[in-house]
Image 1 (cartoon, one colour):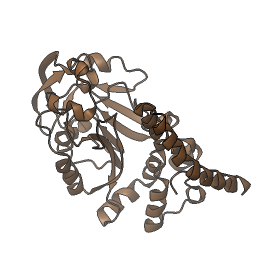
Image 2 (tube, helix red, strand yellow):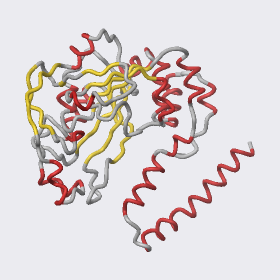
Image 3 (tube, rainbow, N blue to C red):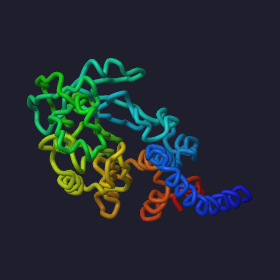
Image 4 (cartoon, rainbow, N blue to C red):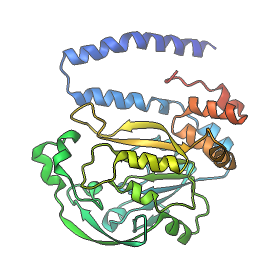
Length: 315
């Protein structure tokens, strides 16, 4: 009880102090990256809460099956969620650039394959100076200034190689490796996210994380609202997003977005209840405690340990 009172008091003090602190930073004209860094830290503040003991009890010996498409650097390489939760995943990595996936360590399965809406050959544009920016779409330098890319750095985004890649669909890939149910899907493929999703009709992940371009760095990429409309038709809803990188304006030029089955209809409810333990675990891992509690009340899901945990950072 005393601990809770102290935390509430601390939050009240911070709400008073922080606005003055940020004004001071601006007065001192500190580099905007400092402000962005502090904002980033606040976004991940829920990582200070440790749900591992609760998740262990929920999952027992089960693992969350994850497919990471566009796996530059490895599973969850950008630390979107805390590494303390990695032990709960069985992760499969997919990336068409073999030289990069060879560098990945401690992975059970790495698949060197391109993915698309159909089984066909596609041209891959490789940027050796920035391998993570390689894409099935060629760079669009007219939009680089929106992404705060300096002209002196434009050459880093020059295409150094291009070649044809035999692509397959998500459905075919998962069937080939005998995956019956997919729990978590992450796609970061520099504009190809929509085409890849179109190749998945036999699987319904409990949580999907996508990189979404509002103003794309690549030519002829489908618009962001096409992508969101397609996910809506798949019966998914957007529950959270986070800006990527440092942008030159307030425009969120690119974002990471998180989607879950539409919990407001019967189809979404069925998908969640069919894999209840994994859904609860994913929502905790992604810091969605308050929304999880609302969904639990709607579906009459009982878990006293989750119910008594207070969201210390977003209430």
